[in-house]
Amino acid sequence: MNIIWQYLDKRSAAVNALKDYSSMAYILAHTDEEIAQVHEDTTTLGSPAFTDMPGGSPNPQSGEMRIIAAIDEIDVLRERYRQAKEYMEWFQPAWDSLSEDERYVLEQFYWREDQNIYTICEHFGIERSSAYNKKNRAVQHLTLLLYGKA
Image (cartoon, rainbow, N blue to C red; front, top):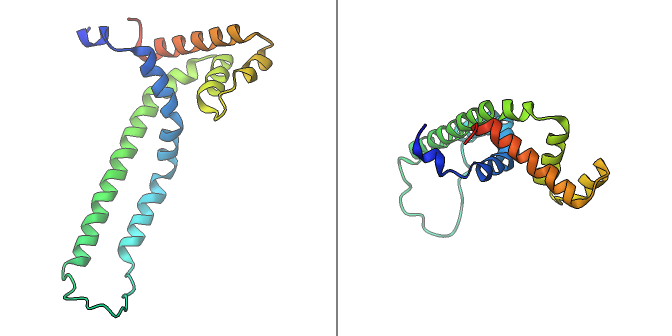
């Protein structure tokens, strides 16, 4: 085992991975649309702007520059998609291995806007301290599934 793993805060890394889940799912779901939009924007011509201001000489390579910018943007979108797919291939099996209760607790605590601990308390009929303990055990289990034992 590499010595670096001894100093990695695996719990914080697991929580950060958990928080990134919705962003990665969005990227996977919408990248094709974004690439199609870039293609469409590249192939349509812009309207000339008529103003009273002297325009000087227009850039003769403006069309080429626009195509190059679109290609660069598509490359960025594809790389982002590749990273999101790699993330899901790593994270999803660990997530699926959690129990329903563990997933519920982590969803409520990390994916909901309000992060209301009382929702967890009401769902399980437990006190706040028990809800926090349940959350901590779920994070610890997710950490173990993602990174293995220390």
